[in-house]
Image 1 (tube, rainbow, N blue to C red):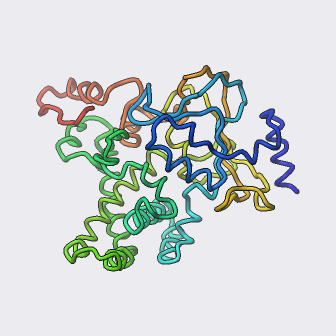
Image 2: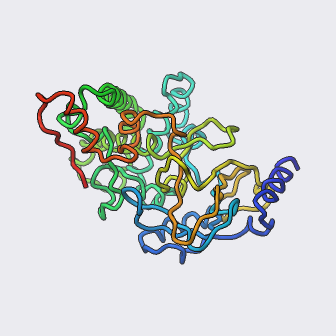
Image 3: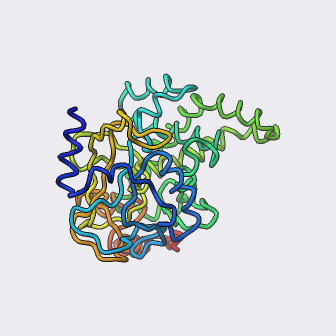
Length: 349
C-alpha cells in the first residue's frame, strides 16, 4: 500500500493517468532500425515510452533522444523498471560468480564498480547480443570500434595510447587518466581470476577454436575496459537522492550532457510486483524521466552528467569529452603551457 500511495502521489504531480503505467513501448518511435531490438527488449521488461524518438545526436557524439512532439513541463518522457537496469543486485545474483563479486562489494574501495564491470564483461563475452540483456549490451561502447557502424563515437582515456595520455602532462587530467588506467588494469586481473573459467567453458561449449579459448584472458581484459567505460560515462544515481547506487539505466544513458538539463529523473515505487510490469519483470521500482521544462518538438533531451561539479580536466577523463570545447582544443591549451612538448596525437572524429 505504501508503494501504491507513493506511485499515486508521483503520478498526480506528473499529471498522468494511472493507466499510463501499463503503456508499452512502440518500436515505431525509433527512426533508425538499429534501435528496434533495444526498444523491443525494453517493451518486454515493461518500459513506458512517451513522446521520444532516438537518432543521431545534434549536440554530442553518438546517439541521442529527441522529443517527437511538444512536451509540457512535468510530462512523462519514459519510465524504465529497475529490473531492466543493471546494478549490484544483478552482479551479486549471478549464478556463476555472484558470490565472488559480492565479496568484492563487501571489501569496499571500488569493489562495487569492479563487481559491476565483471558482470558486464562476463555477460557480453558469454552471451553477446543473444543473452538476456543482449539488445541493451549491444548498444554499449565495448571498444573504440564498437558498434561496427561507429555511431557511438565514444572517446575515453581507457582506450588512448600512451602518447595520447602523455599529451595531457601538465594538466590534472594526466594524473587522473594514469590513475584510472592503472586501477582498471588491476581490476582486469581480479576479474579474469573470477570469470575466466566461465568464459573459457562457454567458448568450448559453442565450439570456439583452441586459440580463441587460449586468448580468453585477452578478451576479458578488453571487455573489462569497455565495461568500465560504460560505467564511468553512463551510470548515474537518481535525483531524488533516495538511492545512492549508480546503475546503468537504458535510454537514460543515451541522453547527451548539458549544464542545464531539460529532463529530470527520479526513482519511484510502482507496485508492479502486485501484477503490473512487462512479460519479463516489472519490479517495485522504476526510474521515471520527465520534462524539467517545456520541450519543443524535435528538441534533444539532455541530462546533466555531473551537476556542475567537475573541472574540465576531470570531465575529460571521466566522460571522454570537455563540455563546450573540443578535445583537441583542450589539449592545445595544455601544450601552450609547454611549448617543448611533442604534437598531440588524439584521434578526433
